[in-house]
Structures are given as structure tokens and as C-alpha cells.
Length: 326
Image 1 (tube, helix red, strand yellow):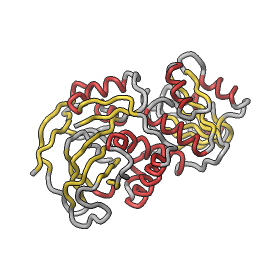
Image 2: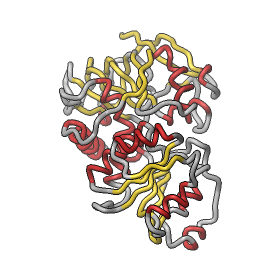
Image 3: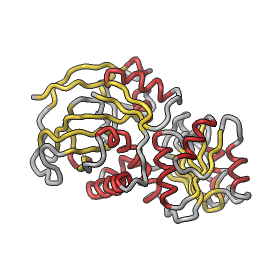
Image 4: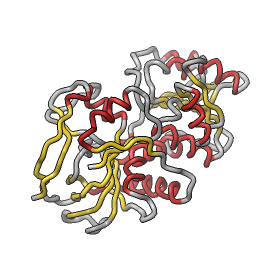
């Protein structure tokens, strides 16, 4: 039996509810794999879960993605081998741990030229970007996308992905410094939402037409403005709610604003299928290996300081990706 350090919490609340403890990690069952984890991703979904936005059973773990080395394989696992470098984004949300055992379907071989830290920083964020730009709605060269929180972990990858596809990405961010960072990573324009009305500026930049697609992880505070930024038949993708959940609304609004489309995807749905998950990861790793996507790790914390990582992320003082080191 392997002893692991693991972060758990026993009630919803602020960062202080997280505790570090020692647990025994069970051997992998059929279809599972055990991993010694070298780096762990920190994502806003971890805050949603910890704070009670998403219901959970207690005690509970946290964390969606990580990277490390395979230490044991259950029966039937054929795409991995002992000692192999791997990374994953898995919906079980228990990655804040030094070792763990999980379903192998979402665990992906990691190319040698991508470090553990890079992989942990991009797995959930990069897989999210992959489905946003490659699967949610057709996007072709020349299309225009409005992307909120463009200097965040997903945002900086999205800026680069859009540039690689020949898209015009209009970002939003909360400071001139963050806007400059988004622009440096491939955004065509970036709007400082603390000093400008982003909807008015989007319409100005698009000569009154609006954008083809909005990708919005902010939620309540940007939802209506995002709809107003779309051209007729445009697609609204809401994939997070950092400012709170979008309240119920009259779907007739979509007709009134130009026969708009609205979707609420999650990465968990995409990675649930083994073949799709592995294909998405390969696409992501190819983008990184080719240099089209450069990984921006803005913040590193010892796993014991996970609470500080959450405080910094919630305060919106971070840029790029945050990771924990076990």
C-alpha cells in the first residue's frame, strides 16, 4: 500500500476549509492506473467545488488535472505502461495528491518534450480550449471571437490557439497589463473592462456587425453584454461562472437578439469517451510541441499551500496557469 499526502475538505467554504492529510492509496482495479504525481493543476472549477457552487459529498478531494509517472496498472489497461510519463484531466476531481489511483481512460501518454509542470498547467485548460475551438461550433479562418478573461490560464492558451487558426480574437481583461499580456499571446484586440464598456467596444471593432462566437467563463456579470456582442446567428458558449451563475432568462431573448445559439459545454462530457479524450490530448500536445502554444506558468505553490493558490486565483491577481508541487 502507498501512503499519499492529499488535500481534502469536509464542508463548503473559503480556502481555510482545505486540510492536508495522509491516506492509503489502493492498488489499481481493472481499467485503473496508479500515478506518482509530480505537478498538479489549479483551476477555477476547484473553487466552485470547494465553495459549494457545485454540490458534493464530504469528505471530498479537489483538483481536475495533474502529471506524473505510472507506478501500477490494473487489468485491461493497454495504452499505458509502467514508468511511463503521463498527464490527465479527469472528472473525478481528486488530483490534489502526491499519489493517486484513477480510471485509466482519461490518462494520456505525455511526450518527452513536455515537462510535468507544463502538462499540469495545460491539461484541463488546454483540453477546454481544444473543445472550444475545435468541437463546439465550426470556426474558420477570418471568424471573430470574443473571449473573456483573456489573460487567465485558459485565456492565454485561447489567444494562441485563435492566432494559430487565423481567427480574430477580441479579449477582455481587468487591467492594461493583463490586456498587454493577452495581446502578446496572440489576441488581435483586448478590452480593459474596468475602464471600457466591452459591448460598445466590440461593436466598434466589428463595425457594428458583432462577433461570430463569444466564449464566456465569467458568467453573470458578462452574460447579457456577451449576447449583445453577437452578430445574428452567432454562438454564445458559456463555460464557467467566475462572477456567479447566470440567472434564469427568457429564451425568447435569443430570437429577439438575432436567432442566437447558446450552449453550456463541460470538459467532463468530452473526456468521458476514451477515444475522444486521447485524440483531444494528442491535438493539444501537438500544438505545444510545434510551438504554436507556449505554456505560461504564472504561479507555483507547494501543495501544502493550496489555500493560498485559491486565494490568489479568486482575487484575480494571477495570470497564466497556477500549479501545485506535491
